[in-house]
Figure 1 (cartoon, one colour):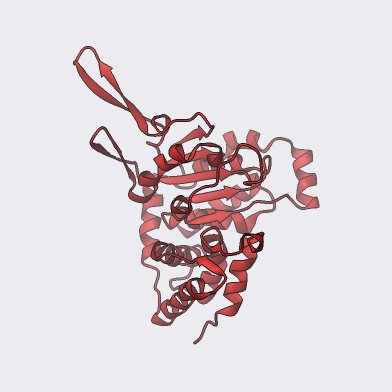
Figure 2 (figure 1 turned 45 degrees about the vertical axis):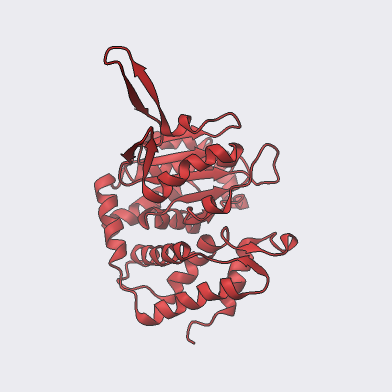
Length: 306
């Protein structure tokens, strides 16, 4: 299993050039049974990355292009009257898949964005008084343009809290951009990307993540980090208990990817900015220009050993 994960990461690195840390975070998010928010400017490979993740892990996937006129039924599904049976039949929407790519999620209205809340938290959807269970694994990869761009709606805190991680790809460095220019469109590679796992094995790895050992001293460190986000005077909204549980699962996943059977403080530190930055709400909006740096500042302020 460890070899398969290493090969999956290596394959992704051949598609998305020069972003090994971000790719490792994406895999950790999937294995921790979380959901992923990729925020960046258009054209840096967000959609290509989601497609590559689906192929490498052997997952069925659907894509929904979020627009201002998208309706909740366009995601969840709709009941249609069947004349033959004289009954309404529920026709499942694109959310019924293993990897859902919510492309440009912040271009849809808040009402439509909220259609994902139940699916992301409970892995089910409700329609017409019926509850429908979603496939396993269920992984939402949402892409988001910077909120300064025209035609975007800010994601509410309740939805941001359901994304385990937020990752930025950023522009490639000069060497990797030269390789991109020479090799052409990266999406052309996707048809040749092999599947190193399948849905059954992904679910098995997700169970293994929960068995990675966490010592009492590591729990103490986690709680100090959580408390620090809630007690600072310049923080209006700190990390929730759900965020704390997600941080633990992400650290376990990071340790598993490194081939370790126990979580180290370095594992928590590696995933903390991606788990915490999008959840922390500052009192001074002008101070929130770089939430990732603020999360790293919190890491530096909290000692590993009390």
